[in-house]
Structure formats: C-alpha cells, structure tokens
Amino acid sequence: MDDDQAHQAVPGHLSGTSRTMSVDADGEPAMTLRRHYDAGVADVWQACTDPERLARWLTPVSGELRPGGRYQLAGNAGGQILRCEPPRVLEVTWESPGGQPVTRVTAELTPAGEGTDFELRHSGPVDGEFWDRFGPGAVGVGWDLALFGLALHLAGSPRPEQVAGPPSAAYRDLVTGSSLGWQAAAEAAGTPPGQAKAAAERTTGFYLPPS
Image (cartoon, rainbow, N blue to C red; front, side, top):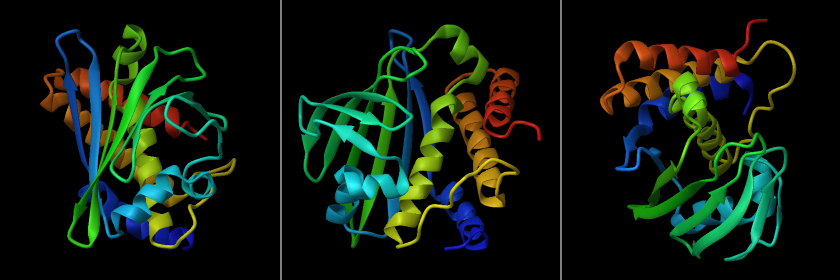
C-alpha cells in the first residue's frame, strides 16, 4: 500500500473507531478505543502477540513473553504481562520511558460475524500537569496510530514509515482527526469545551510540530 492508498484508508479508521473517556472515583481516567476488523479472532490475536508480526505494525518487542513475564517495546514502554487468555484478553502494565505513572493496557477481542470487535483500554493514574496540558489525546492519538497500523497489517499492507521531514498526508490527517475525536470524548466526559480544545491543539502540535 502506497501513501495515497494509506491516506484513503484514514477516514474509514477515524469514523469506524469509537473513542470514550471516563474517570473513576479516584480521579483516574480511562481511554477506550473500539473498532471492527475484517479478520478472524485468531488472526487478530496472533498479530497482537507474535513478536514477528508485532514488529510489522507496532514496534519490535523483547522479553519474557508469558504471564508474569516482562516485555519491552523498542523505543517505547515496557511492563509486566498481567493476563494472557488466548485468544480473547491481553492485559499488561504500561511503564513509559518518560517517568509517567505506571498505567494499564487491556485488549479484548470478541468474534463478530467473520471478523473481530477489538477494544483497547488504557487506564490508571496520571501526572496532573501532563494531563491538564494534553488530556486524553496524550495516549489516545498514539493508540489511534497503532490501531490504524494494525488495520493495514491485517489487510496485508505494510505500515507507512514516518521519516524526518514533512509528514505524509495519511499521518497528518490521522493525527488531526484523532485529536478532534479525543477532544469530543473529553467534552462528553465533562471537560469544559475550551479546556478540551486547547489540550487537543497541544496534542496535535506535539505530533505535528511546525516545520
């Protein structure tokens, strides 16, 4: 798939993915993405757990890849594998290299016809200053990029690589659309519109800095 084809696939991902934010009694937020993949549960599960396939749409992973073991994503987070119940549930801790609080990521797969309904939930404590600045898009946009890459992989297409220089149209539109989606999710969860909009603009600026 070339950049033009990837660009054409962006609107379908943005409209076909639901984004919600909730806050529990302790003030800890949870960001949830849900979308459907036209691939069977076994295929989606293997794409999310096989190191060779993970490297093709997310990033290389290393470690003791078993319940109780630890994983490390190259250049990204690491953590402990809390639950692994093939082919339905994978739950891990998420320990960011930047020193943010330890959070939790849960992926749940559900058969839906000949395809799979996929839900990813990222929850846990947040740094208050960081949250006020970026809101749910701080992690939500990154997961949108990842799940778009998974969609391309499941369709048999490589993920477009981002290199230094002007971003591709697909990357630009995906980041912008995702930020707007997380702004809407924040507002639906009770965040004042002005605050949600400012956080979304800062998140977009982080992923798309001025040339």
